[in-house]
Image (cartoon, rainbow, N blue to C red; front, side, top):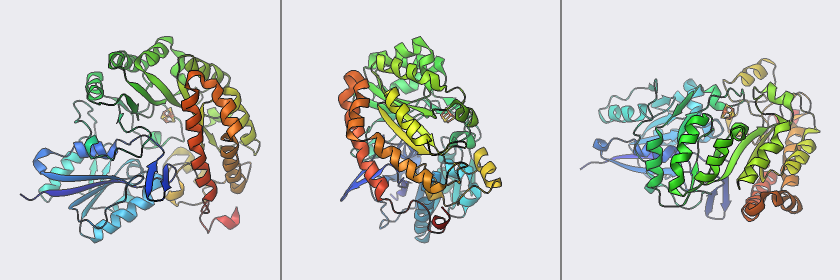
Amino acid sequence: MQFVKILIVLPAGQPHKLEFGPIKMSFREAPLTATSLAALIPDDLKAEVKIVDESVSPVPFQEQFDLVGVSVLTGTSSRAYKIADIFRERNSKVVLGGVHVTLMPEEARQHADSIVIGFAEQTWPQLLNDFSQNRMKPVYRQQKIDLKNLPVPRRDLQKKLGYTVADTVFATRGCRGKCDFCSIVAAEFGWHTRPVRDVINEIKAIKSKRIAFNDVNLTDDPVYAKELFREMIPLKKIWGGLASTRVTEDDELIELLQKSGCRYLLLGFESIDNQMLRGINKGFNKFEKYSEVVRKLHGIGIIVQGCFILGMDGEDPGIFKRTLDAVHELKIDIPRYALFTPYPKSKPFQRMKAQGRILHEKWEYYDTQHVVILPDKMSPKQLDDGFKWIYKETFKLKNDFTRTLGSGKNFGISFIGNLAYKLYIKKLYQDLNRFPAEVLPGC
Ligand code: SF4
């Protein structure tokens, strides 16, 4: 019997890719994209499937595939197009999908035989059926999304080692927030939930005790989140995920977080200045509430990973020291920093483009770890230097130690998490490619 050979690729994302000689590691939880796409392949296609997350495994360019699917983020789009071009030259059919394809379909089409705009739950199986009958269309667009009865992700195809957490699940898609820097908002993904029963059944089948949710804002709908967490209590898992600072506004939700086994949350604090927060349409974050948010989560044994964005309009070079001080004072267990990155098609991108403040459109630099804009109160070089400086200062050993004392019984895990960032900082300082060559002289 002739099998259809399918390869699904997640191109390497620079920020979370760490290499130690021949060993590749990803500084993140296992992504679900490739395993979910593999699970959606119809049985009657008789497909032989391989999935590759380039952060942890090389792309098998030496092999021949009938169809190659590549998931594209803005920061990985240049690499994704390169991979697509290579496989097309070898007569594989190439399909591109993902957030960047949804934002920039015309650009993506130049590198693909077919593109998928929006979510893929219904369109990807449809595309594969069309492919098997030689009538694949150039564009598939998800109209309505149905998250009921999804097949279980093919975790068996995923590399087991190399991730901070290997078993990931999702319960929700999108977010109801309107933060104007967010790619989810720019792509107009909306907000969708899976039936709680489906999520619980999937978690039950996972053998390991530790899991992670990779939803962008798991607690966006507290009613849904509470139902989910209630059902998770008997499963006795330990889990982490992403939420907004609003998570601590509801005492019942906090109690259920604890009872369901939540051990860490990544929160987007974004800024220590309420004016900046209003400027990015995230006014529900209030700096004066941050210490209460952290205190409440620490109180129930949850490690707080806090993300802060640097380079927003109105920020001067003093922002780095002010943010550093706040992060220590708040006792954020594991801080993370991102550079303000206006994704294509987003409102900030359009505004800054009209103002002549987009430095370039080389998407490989749009990974939140490279300066791509002209800030209004400092130079791009000052922003880049400040970004590296705050990372280095934050994760100095004595700072790690004093800050993670606030983690209480989670001190050990938090401290190790902080130590891991030293690898990233080394990589950041070794990165000689902070700006494209043609942009650097003007910095
Ligand atoms: S709350 Fe988070 S996921 Fe939702 S729009 Fe804002 S940044 Fe995006």
